[in-house]
Length: 217
Image (cartoon, rainbow, N blue to C red; front, top):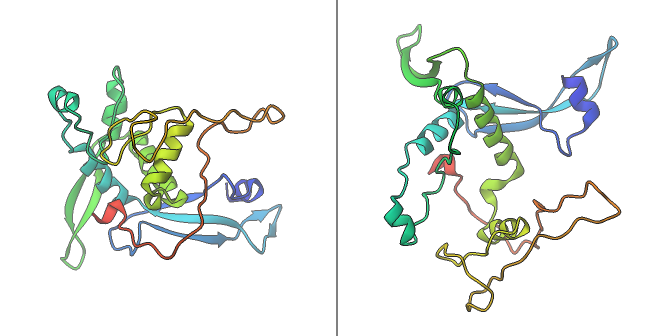
């Protein structure tokens, strides 16, 4: 796998390795170069490997799952879903949901008698939870925790969602807000695989920004 990741490059590929424990200074560490062997030859620079503290993102996921859904009356009055709320489509299979909550956080004793927290399986199949954790890690590596509100509005506009005011309410052009509804740009006809949405538009930096990642809130 390391050899394949190295050949594929790191532009759109993020090799990850999960590690247990809560004693990590950050949920993601890396990237670090790992040695790989191809045909008996050791490469000088291997694949770029990111280490993921899966316990941290599992705790964040379960915290998000405990968030309450606004009532229909609250939604009709303009209340928005809480940040991090997990939206599941109707008709979701029971097996998928069981895999999402297939682990529990328990306190165990070490050989020296100290208590520590660790995630343990409640059932054998837990692939959905793993996919959620590594997708969250990919978002962290992509920098989603540092994106500004303007960046999210721009991404929403690229997929045709209506622009929103600072209060989160949809607005139409001419409502006096500083944002306008925009349709997604069409891909270049000469490039059939050019993305029509999801393009991050980089703005010039105006100094350092201090942010608090969601896993620390």
